[in-house]
Structures are given as C-alpha cells and as structure tokens.
Length: 548
Image (cartoon, rainbow, N blue to C red; front, side):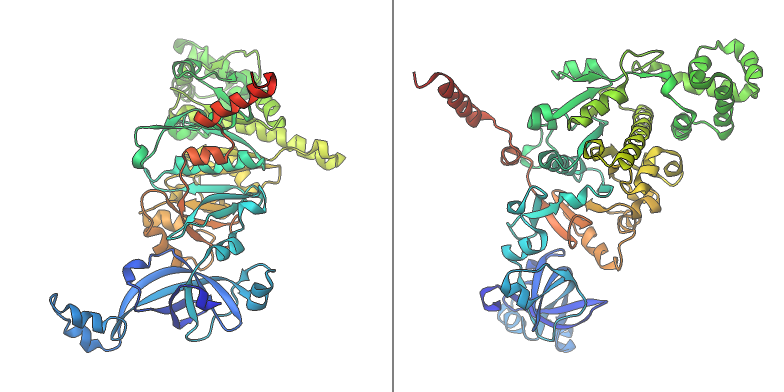
C-alpha cells in the first residue's frame, strides 16, 4: 500500500500527548512542507491521519553546523543534505483506522489512542484519504465542498447536518475574507436545505451583488444570494431608497413600532448611547407608569416639561433628562414609527415557515446603534415565537408542528456577545441554549477575544482565517483540548483564501484553501447564466413550439 503512495519521511520520535517527529526524506526540501499540511502514516496495524504542525532544521553532528560550507561549496552542501543535515517535521496524529478496515473498505476513522511504531512511513495524503475522513459531495447533500487541503486538489467537505446542530463562528482579522467565507457557508446551507437563514446584513453584502474581496477579481462584482437562489431568498430592507438606488426589488420594507422596544433593548445599547445605569433604571419607572408605550411617552416630552414628567413617574429629573436626550437619537431612524401596518416579525416567520431565507439589508442605516437595536428587537421577538412553537411541538408531537431550524447570522458579534452584553442580549441566551428551541447563531467577527468565554465554548464549528493577535488566537481555541499545537498553524495562515476548519462539522482540524466564489461555484449552486442560460431558453422554446 505504502509503495503506491508518495513517501515524505519516517517517524523517528514522539508521544501520544506531545505529537510525533518525522525525519524528512532527502528528496524533499523543508521549504516544501507547510504547517497545516495533511499527511498519512502507515503503521504496522493502523493508518494514522495527521497534520503538520512545525518544521525545523537538525543535524547528526553539531560540528557540521559550527563550520558550515560556503555559498560556493554547493557540492558539499548537497552531500551533507539528508545525511548530516536534515529536516524534522512535527506531526499531530488526529484520527486512525485499523488496516483491516482500510482494506475491507468499511469503517470510519476514530480518535487516536496510540501511536505508530518507529520508522513507520509517512506519505502524502491522497484523494481516498480525504474522502474517507471528510466525506464527499457524492455521498449526499449534507456534505458541502468548502475548500481544498494545502498542496492538494481534492475537495474538503463540511458535514452540514452536524453544522446546523450548534451555533458556529467565522473569525479572522480585517481583510482576510470573512464575508467571502460567510457567503460560501450560507450558499451551502441554502443549497442543501438543512436550515433557514436570517442574515443581518450590516453592509448590504449578501443579498445582491457585492465587490470582490481580493485577488484577480478586485474591483469586480460577485453574485449575492438572491441572484444565486432566486425566489428561495427574500430581501428585507430598512432603507428602501438605498435598495432602489442599487436597482434591487426588495420583498419587504421593515418598519418597527416604538412599543416593541423594551428597556432591555436600550440597556444593551448603553455603550453606544453612553447611558449610565441610573438612566436605565429610570426607564423602568416609566414602564411602570406607561407600559409598552413608555418610549413614545418619553420622546414626545418637551425638554422644559421633563421635571414634571420625572415627578409623575417618580424618577430623578436629571436621570430622565439624560435618558430623554440620549434616546432622542432614535427619532432619526425612519423605520421607527408610532404605528406600523404590518408586523416585521410575523412577516419573517411567514417566509421562514415557507423555507425562504431572508437577508435583512440595512442600507445607509448601518451604524452600530441601528444594527444592534434592530437585531436585538427582532431576534428577541423571534426567539419568543420559537419558544412557543417548540412547546406546541413538544405537546402535540406532530411533524407539521416542528419549527424549521433557523440560523441567525450576525456580524461584529463581539458587540452582542461580549461578557457584559452576553448576559443582557438575546444572542447570549441563544448561544447558550445549544439549539434547544431550533434557533442557533452564525457569528462573524474579527475580535473573538472580546466575545464571552462561555459563549465561545458553545461554538460548534469554527472557520478561522488569519489572526495575528495572541489574545484572539487563544480565544478561538477556547474549549479545544490540547490546543497549543494549533497556535502555530493559525499564525502561519496566508492572509487570503486560507482558513483553519475545526469543530463539530469536521472529524479533525484541517487547513484549507477555500474554494473560489466564481462562475464554477455559481454553476455548482444551480445558477444558470450567460451562454448556458441562452441555451436553456432556446431548449425551452423548442419544447414549446417544436423545431420551426
């Protein structure tokens, strides 16, 4: 078996806990071995699936290093290479299979519980290894091709059935393509019908066309989800004028009445509004007097009448004055109104129940204040509805009462899930519930270190692009056992189109080169365009009218 594979080296040292060391074959240069590479070890009884974690230079005799050959002594350097000097590659075995199962062609890889013997041969992984570990799209729609291993052209697949079982995260510093990665994952979820998505699209990058992130396509446009999937995706907007300027026909214009804003929604915006705790407490006194109309009653007060209003509700005038002044900022949002003709949450549920995915665009209303306010209000009410739906399903047991799995995508997730906000906002509740009520999160963020540790520990699958800050790297690895070896892998990623994929949806961590979001991808998602579209139209005409 190993003779058919391309040999990389042999195992010479190591342990189950610390990992293995491989002596690199002299035919290889250490410059050909990259951190994150996927390799296979052929042991006596088992096959081990491993990741390269580190590379170093070694020598059999320290004297060789004390008197290195000059640049002109190329022959001497070639003689020394592979014998007196060689490369040592550190490997982390992650999965293993009994060789009997490999030969028989059945069985699944399982966690490593031992290590191969001395001088076991290390080989480059092949397509059959990748498919054996990660599955393939030929095995069903639950497997979604998200990229390829380093130095290989075989697709790496993510198990979407496992992916939707937990909240998940996409991380990476600014400019590493988080939006690109998110668009890929959302496309896979829509294509597979594994869950319905609600995307809070802060910068209008998911629904319709957006600018290509990097590479040869810089400055060009890529298709949005609505263009790829047509009627299976609906665009809701807070800014109809912005949608019209971009030539987009939105499916629903979002309007929110003041009486749907709670004190908890305002408390979660304390940093954005610069509100002190006393002002928030004063808001509860207004609620005690006016109920759901508390905000309308406060905003319609004239500044000169604030003292009388404060006495009426039993609050300190200065606190009410500060609250009134800060919340007056909300009046600039056109989507906030006294009364609305159609409830946005019920409209969202109507689309979700039909299996239609929703992109909620913010248009020019893309401030953090607006984004957090709208996301909190809608998600809190959606969660309440899903709790009732779930309880009804549990009481009846009827399949038609089972809620559709909903995944809510939020950008700048640390704003909602930092240690303080995670205890106040509905997003912290959803992250901790582990899909208890058929709602989970897809969190997108460049500063995972600002997200609450408890929330991060509940994140099932993490797709992580380059992170340079040590605190962010540590945060992404929260809850991952024996994760020290992954730090060097994360730090060595390229700044574009590379990511570390690990967690619930994959059997083992793997570094991938993400697939291109291009015409080939559009076709794989079922989109027909250009010449193919013309041919399809001609074929339809021929079917209708015959060859005339």
